[in-house]
Figure 1: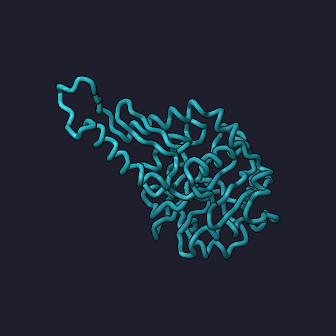
Figure 2: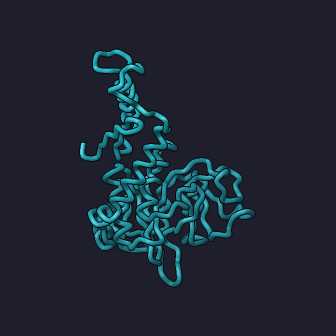
Figure 3: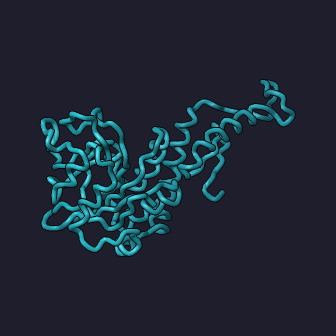
Length: 269
């Protein structure tokens, strides 16, 4: 119960960080609100019951989002300190030993189904670029990526533009920050795994100052919004919540440095 909070001001709300609990939480909230709308004798509350006053004006989901933002903002330093995770520890704790960065590109492609149409290229390779949209099996036949970027999405057949409307489905959520240090980003990844019970598939060292964490995609829109409400106040980039947002691909060179995997688990962990 340490990750569960019950709010009774405004809209009565049970909140839990765990993604796996969200379906149960929704039903529990319905029961809680029904129960509070009746007194302990089972009699509906009427205007004459002055001892109990409920003000239900705000949308429950909106209130949950506000609560999460407040929790994240007020506990930012605590989370970034408590979950601090250095890149050396990530590398040592990787379920797959990552001895040769030259293997990272092909290792990354194993996260996809062979028939998945994915985009690889540079940021401007979109609009009239069918050659940048290929099945994972076709990309696998190349020795290295044709650009520095990819996305966490699968695109519809015939795509020539990396646009949200051309996304068939988002497979992965990629989390990154332009302001946090690498150990602080590691803290964010660990908090997501612990508090939200999200599966992580990879961590990419971008060859610069940041890390990109590859996570399972939340199955519901409201879950994604709650996760965004938690991550953005911590310093994460909201742009990567767009399904077609370009992110660094492992195996490519950036200013003579390799964009490399420092943690990897094909099955997610």
